[in-house]
Length: 373
Image 1: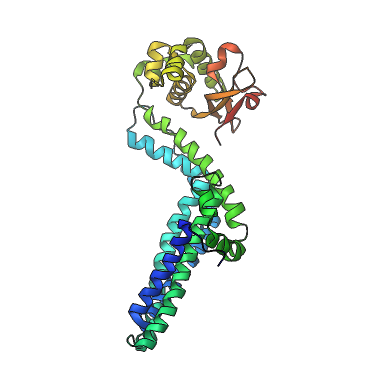
Image 2: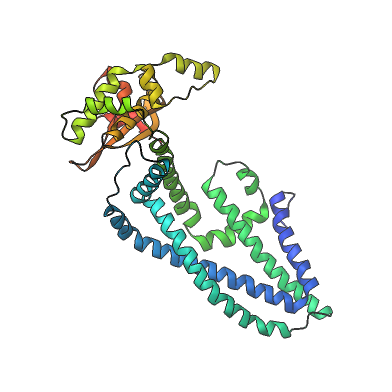
């Protein structure tokens, strides 16, 4: 047979079927039929739970976001506890990131629906499995039928494994072992004849797009870690931020004042870059260290600006990605975005580049800055 080969994926798929077949022969027709019934019933309950949970999460997403908006939970003060900072970061992430909000609602809905349907399904499965108990389990005929039923159950399990491999290959086309998986003739045959027609565009088009969008949101959540780890600020930084923004009324005026302060008081630390590029040594530093030494690299500028901005009530975030190097290429970079409540929009700014021009919300900002996807 053309699809049989020495590939380990092929061997694994055949082993799943073979083990199930042997179990069927050993258990006999009655027990094997009961297990097949439980397998099919359980799969149906799970599929129904996923579909209903997805529908419920989609329907509830917008109302839930509006409800969170009405909570008016403001950024905790710099002296607030770490739990308060973490709670606000989680709250803001669920409120602002649609895919994360969907995943949060989907998980809650799935657990609730699965509990209800699982309870109902379990009762129905037990009732439906009663007739299976009258089928004799011993004897050669029973074992032969048990083997057939076990093989059918094994095929179902092998298809689930094939679907999982197919999803992995679709999500990570350049990932490890993708080429090896694709070399399995049995996998290719099952994927082409069953999985791809049944799934349609789900695995090859929708799932990769969803995964890419979800990764972008996870990157934003990861960047929000600075909201927590940089929350506890020394009094002198808070005092400096308040002095720099004294008399400033609007969010834009405050953000501009802090941009000017950080850009003019912090010197770029070329030695830190050299140590990292030539020695592989990265010197992590807090906003307090940047403030005290008046030296840092782009991430240090961005973290100090964010910390000072939060201390005067601005909503701000640290953005990481790529910045134009002036030589035709791009390198790792970090900057900030701050929310102007009066204008109801986020604006970008780059205090690291302040010495080279005005990088406070210029019209060409995104021509030179590429945020992580």
